Image 1: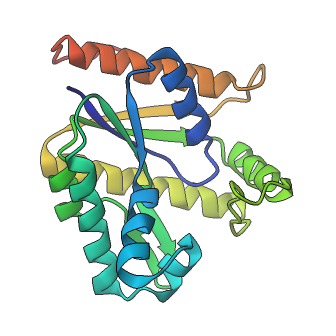
Image 2: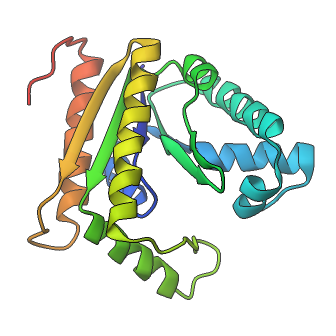
Length: 209
């Protein structure tokens, strides 16, 4: 059984990458940490929207929700990818998406951090905002390139801290060149993650580039 946490900043295209992984490994389970948190929030606090989750929850309740969501995910059996963010931007600053207790409960074999060109991330966010589909629409504050660079830098630091805390692997994938064709980075990232999964399932302890 392999358990990975895959992280990236909003707009990085992580969902597309994970869909491509499922296409190639149909048996693998993908769970979105934020979705599980929202399910817990709807039961306990009658909160049904992610914006409300961030804006209306006090710190202690939010932290408890993170831990409850982690416990729910930890009970899932089989090969699993946990889709989440290493940090959450709040009005008070950055808050860890993988605080110590949460990552202890999840107990991953590896944390995968995906980094992309800030220009590509901003372009994806603009594309998301232009969609007419309300159900899957994720309205994000459009930032400057410098803001995205900072967000990615801090996210990597937080992912590193989480990996260090539970003594798991940190696997960093960087895609900082322009794409030569649509979804090039998503395809390459999915293949790299699949390769990692296959190596871990075989029990290999050393990963070559």
